Structures are given as structure tokens and as C-alpha cells.
Image (cartoon, rainbow, N blue to C red):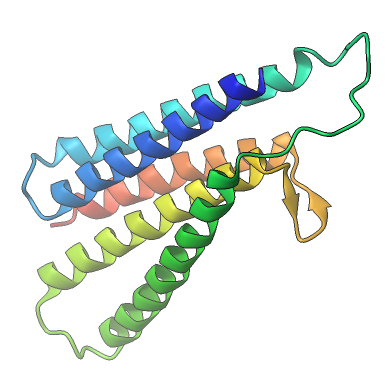
Length: 174
């Protein structure tokens, strides 16, 4: 079951990367504007499916006849991917803050480019955050020594939905 959960985790991460890229390209008008909302809704749907597979996998096989002496080690690819995506997340949030400050002080005069840049970086930061949370869950769910709960993962999906609706409304302004 662990292999199925890992495949579901990798498939979800790949889907998040793909649909986030499509959403960013939609922001820059390489696709129609409805592609942005559809991409973000697809990410939300895939997140829900991934959560169901991961949660269901926790309940399958819990009544083992023989307890194993060694706990199952997480796939090391999740740790490497998490580290890379944490770097992307930190860089994206920093750029988002910098652009936000520049927007507040009216340093960037071209509002359309500013909105597109803010939207693109926000999508990138959100995708990195979701991937980091998925990797943490597949590594054993420990965040700072505390166990990462299913409720926390469902909260992330709920926030993803709210974020996508906010972004869709924001994109409708220009």
C-alpha cells in the first residue's frame, strides 16, 4: 500500500506542477482566461483524490498479523523534492513581498504587468507550498517534531480552494 501512496503522491506533485504552469501561462495570456480557473480547480480536485488515497492507505493493512521490526522508510525522493521546493517557496514569497512593497509605493507604474507578476508568483508559491506539504506527509508527517494530521492536510486543500477562488476574482479585474 505504501507504493500506491507514493505513486499517488508523485502523481499529485506532477499534476500540481503541470496545472500551476498552465495557470501561470494563462495569467500571461498564452491561454484563455478560463484556463486559469479550470487549472486551479483541477489542482483542488486532484488534491482531494490524493488525500483520499493517502488516508485510505493509512487504514489498509493496519491489522497486520506480524508486527514488523523495522518501520518502513520513506522514499528519499520526497525529502530531496521537499528541500528544493522549500527553496522555491522562500524565493517566491520573498519576491512576492518585494513586488508588494513596490506596488504599495507605486514604483512600478505598469499595473497590468504588476498584477500578472504578482499572480504568477502567488501561483508558484502556492504550488510550492502544496508540494512541500505533500512531501512532508509522505515522509511521515512530522512538522517540527509534531505529527502532521489529516485535518491539517484537509485544511490545506480548503485553503487551496479559497485561494483559487480569490485568484479567479482577482484575475477578473483586468
